[in-house]
Length: 526
Image (cartoon, rainbow, N blue to C red; front, top):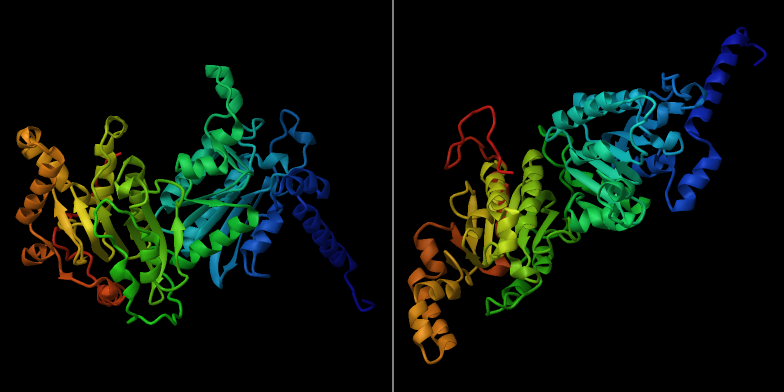
């Protein structure tokens, strides 16, 4: 230091380091303890440290502050304007980030903070890397009237949709129009007990319609995941949330122009799974564990279930086969007999769109008695919701493989990886049965008078149902009619799927059975 000639420069460098330390504390240690730790939440800096590989996070726009001086803002301190932005590596791969600092004006959104998040989002798209946001905000900063800028972030999310993976973690409050910002990303995680996401909160509801509402019941993490289906994942706490973000990204490519990463796999691709031969009951009315089927087929310990608490009659999982990412969609006979309903159709649509956008092959495991009947489902719009699922799978251009385990009745044959939807491969297990409706339901319509006149209507129904099945044909009839590519033993399923997936990696997406003309866009049922 004795040889230092320009002491003024070093004073400025020390001042820079001091300001960095000050800004990185946000609202200060006291607020971190009071607003975050005491409520079971991590500070934004602690969240960043857990999310990114150690020492890789590079912050951007640290020294930004609110430029508003009206309505008392001239007396407020807004280090980093309450939002942290930057980039780093997650599992060795580049990712971009923005997250609210609740200790600075409740993480409220002002003009500068919105510009910061928009800039970093556009930068993520420019280099083709995933974008993660952590939402923990009191909402719009009233002093700044920032609706225009909030809409700007929405437009960036829309522009990035399907181009780069966009993940939003609701790790605190997310209210009003700001809730649409994470809702416009494809993977949203809510945290149990500490997150809220809603358009209209308990107090406005009380004022508007005189209804008392419990905040957790209205908009808590569980509600948003299991009941409304607004989020794709439920985390138990902040640490679990961050682990799930890192896990989700491990299945994703950096952007839509790349393939997902391939992981070393010591699970034999030729492994025969003989447990599958005995897993499906003889009776159509008996349930079994479809998740066990999935876990037996895919690479060991590779299953990440998406929306496990929502629409439990349909299972959607990310997994790997021979180290490659796949998306699996399966009926769940343990819930509503595996029927498709409004919620299941929406769940499938979103999952298919996500996998298709990011080059993840799709596998359907079908055992479906059809769409759920009833006035409730009809009034909720099962026609348009079901059409939405059919549309999504029809336009998906990634490799698509259907495996029918037991039954495929009614319109479910179209929605669940059936013939005529530009499928690449359809495989049937030898237990397969199909018809326009359940055989018992069909004969009750066709032979209603004969059944009503019979001495034993139930016995007559069973007898006619067996005749109906004979007329419809069996699994070999479908093979004869080229409705399936092959009939396979259940224990062969893993090996056969891996073989098909390997062949389909060079699939020309334009050379499909039913050509889709080039156009501005299709019009999805809503």
